[in-house]
Image (cartoon, rainbow, N blue to C red; front, side):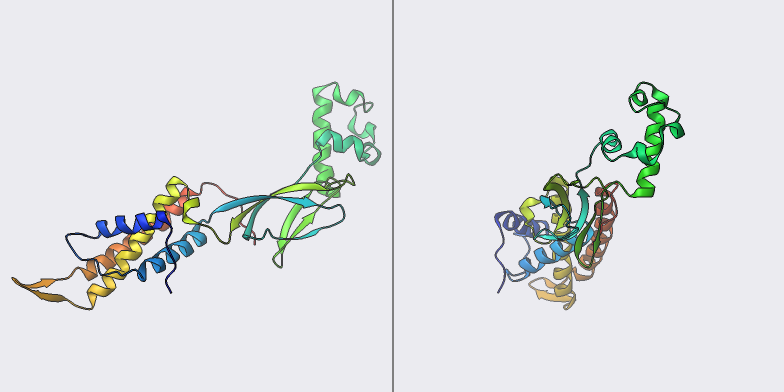
Length: 247
């Protein structure tokens, strides 16, 4: 049974039929085909870009493995609670690990009284991050989110929260932004050209009152191919710089 189209998709269907020649020409695509066109466009958009969602996730001290949000198919980023560099430095005993005289800053109080001392502290903090793993981080393993807490994650202060940014598994075309909506519509149009081209390519011509009329099946198939190639480039460019999608 064909899926029902939402009002936006019904409007696109009418626009596409006009693009393909109605009401002057008959467009040989019945109502069973349109949901297929929509679903193919959704699969293309999901694979190439996707619709983003975000969710606050409670972080429990001592717990490192979490399930994905219920509608997530891939994790894009996790924004973890972090203590400030200076707060982390003072509260986690950094001066016990790296003696003050090694930094040439005299005392913890005087450490913040000069730019050069502050710069030394920041440099030492970066070394501390790399050696002791003090900053929280994350990774995805076996379809679960693993938090690498370091000493800054929750830090025994009770439940904290992380912001999870993810690609949605299920979404509606009504969630698309303006540029994405344009790309999605044009991919649907390309799919309609593809279906129509396949249908019309089965018959080179058909009889009419003034003689036989050639069909444009091969031309529509070629147009669809060119449309898909251009859209793949455009949707890639529309994303801007992104980090690595994990999951």
